[in-house]
Image 1 (cartoon, helix red, strand yellow):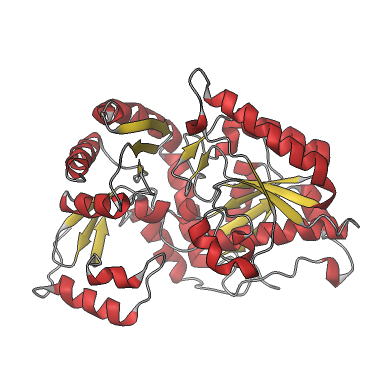
Image 2 (tube, rainbow, N blue to C red):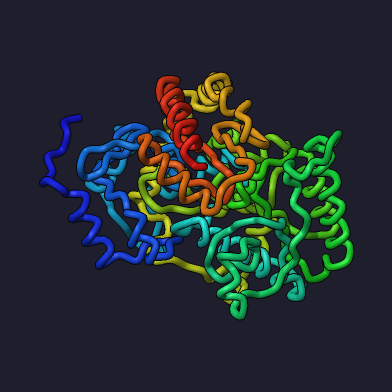
Length: 443
């Protein structure tokens, strides 16, 4: 691609305009008095380019959404073609080919039907929570309207989603608005004591879930989990046995199971969906982030036939009267269909499995680094903790990584890689070298 011509010092000009006009997410804006924003002008493949032409390897897939790289030709072409036909129509009382085709393909992939659409991960969580509570109400059990979630879980930052999110910094300021639900022990394998396996930790954690369900199932609508990996908990990984046991307990106590695959779906864990590795089917699945390959906001919640049937009635009050203005937007659906076509036509899951094995060999110096603890990998996600990390390690590591041409965004003392699937061995070597150099300057 021809380098875009930009005015001299374009970075500083764009930065100043942004600080004057934009309230950036998940950010204490005062920190940008000393920690500059990075103005991005374009993207290509795994690389992001700032307004002065400096490039950064996008090792976090731009907040876990970009699957096949920036400037991806098939997805761009699909959006362009759809723009020439239909940009948007309300989905209440109308339908269109992209949303029907996408719903059919998602149903085939998940084994669940009737996709309900939103715009982002938090809206998917809100949809799932409302849908499960309303399901029990329609069945004559309105008292079943509370939820169980894992300690350290993250399901979004809207009010309902915060009620099942266990990250204090996101939740504390809004505690008067947030309903109390039931947090149960996380199966995070990092809790293993000497001689214990990840499976042992999962079986120990499931006992806490069993206790809560036995005592409170009469008021619990659903259990919501991030399958296999709790992202905001620092990429906490756990054994699939937990999901198998949780599915059995939910069946035993008449509690629905919501799989939040917003971050881990679409190949991130080595299978199309993480639940496949436990050989279970949830009652509802929440999808977003990678669903459009990182191009346009879209979310979907798919449910079992039993859930859908509970809303199918003559009474309007039994309908699921939730809506978003851009529900099932044709452009976003076209991007999602192009994303699924890439998975199908390029055998992405098998390719990722081969790449993960190769990248594990490349990343071996990190796995054996004297300051690295709990080195772990699941599919196209790698993570590790830094022992004796200095204060403000996450900010320090982020800043030092930028000097190496890397976009890393540590979570506390946890460093993770979640790159676009098109990352090459050469890119992985660059990522390794830059990470090692950045870490060396963090003390």
